[in-house]
Length: 114
Image (tube, rainbow, N blue to C red; front, top):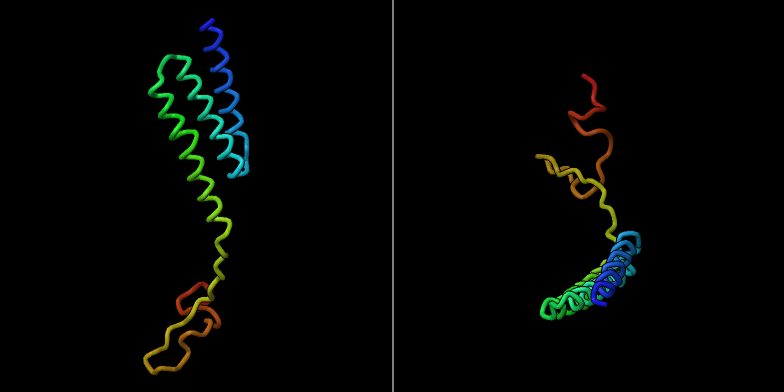
């Protein structure tokens, strides 16, 4: 009977791990990772390691997916930064061009001829 439970728990872990690897969306991946942690906790319980199962339940099934979901949420809500145009600093004469976009090729660049 216990051999059957171990085989079922191992198949459950293998299926959850495969699903976690195949899912592309990070939010769904965190949820599948939670299911993987739960199935690992069941496996540890079947293997008569209740202390490890409790640790796996707390960390692998609850805490890690929660942190991943919060991170994904924060990244998706962050506004995109606008690209800044390159600026040319004011020369020794103080030409007043600081802060304006650079025009033409840079001195010593690929566009300059000798």
